[in-house]
Image 1 (cartoon, rainbow, N blue to C red):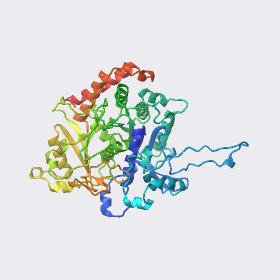
Image 2: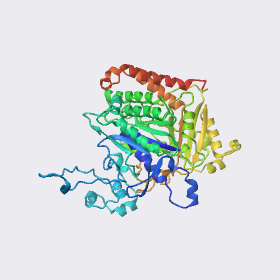
Image 3: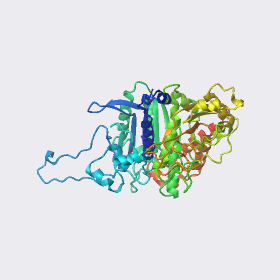
Image 4: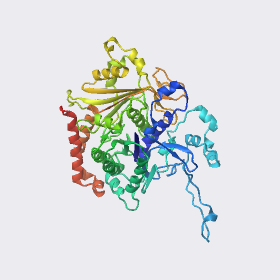
Length: 552
């Protein structure tokens, strides 16, 4: 039951780099039976087995990653697993005149990247002159502070990609402010660009991975919703719905929590791009937006706060790690070796009643100071990770909605054994926790997954946890020692089509309806007409009404 992942956009690839690192850290090579019992993830769902040119066995993500020229840093477009970049020898050139080799200044690699690659050449030694300690000592110390050294998502990518995974669009340059790739219509137009054939290339790569799957169940489409990549993702989504109509699609629009500048055109463009993108993704599958921005129309200083996490919202390296953590956790429900759900069942359950958008909320890390908190109010304290979820009071209390809850890093049996007398009738840990959730969340029909292994937050995961969180992820009440990082954390997630999704979509529809589209002339210039915009707003507003229908 394989799944193909597509990452469309620079921020999507930031999230993806962390996500694939997490998958790599989940691999177990020990014969310890106890560890084997804890390790229940079926990696064949997201990974493929292959051979290098030297006939060496590889295990790489079933992935198509799309970004702009100049966005890869030190990572070659074909990856570094199968090929090495070489400069042609001068004597091999069939030219009788003078020759010169123009060599671009290489991207400076950070210490983590050099340690991972095992670089020991002269250039690497020169780069490391300002780093104290040898490579061995650095590994021994165990901590990397990459906050000022991550400029590309490849700077902390531990996983290895297949040569067909990364697709670079040469018609636009990464971080180009003169000709930015920033408007929904640009993403749609580049799909059929005859000079690049982006659409055909994406189609070919998806087909390559699909044809080698024994049983393809669907796709993950992670895309930047606030830029032109939202338009490109809409075209990819159309392709998946047309050519793979029997397969399921989980759409995950992502957006950074902050903007480089806050003015009407940039904030309005983020809102308009998100509206157009999400409205197009509603045609099939389930849409699960992820962002630490607190509003669809971004405002300076307005980002989502998480207890016991001190992240820098301006660093993509930080915010994308949090989003990847929840994405890794919610998808565990259909990536299990035992008691695995199908992706199609998850999507149909959450999108019941035409509720095509679901929200993710989390407690990261989960503070487990007392077991009784599961019976008290813990399920009401999760933080939604999508914009505009606050201040919504019109949700009909009679509404029923679905929720998939995932508890990881704690043994469900331990919690179950310490339950109070009121819950003695529960027959299993999952049943006990589901009943606790239904008592706290009015109208919620909950399903619980208990996953024993915590989230791995070892290097190069950023140091975003508060000092009172110990190395094994618990709130000890005092600061952990200097030089000691957090290696793992327990966490709780909720994936629902309930009040948070209703609030977010209602606010998106209201804010889009108030936006004067004519004041964003670049959208019109890039091919998105007023009628298309009006239709997108109406689709979002119609969707919001589905969350207050008593008949679902």
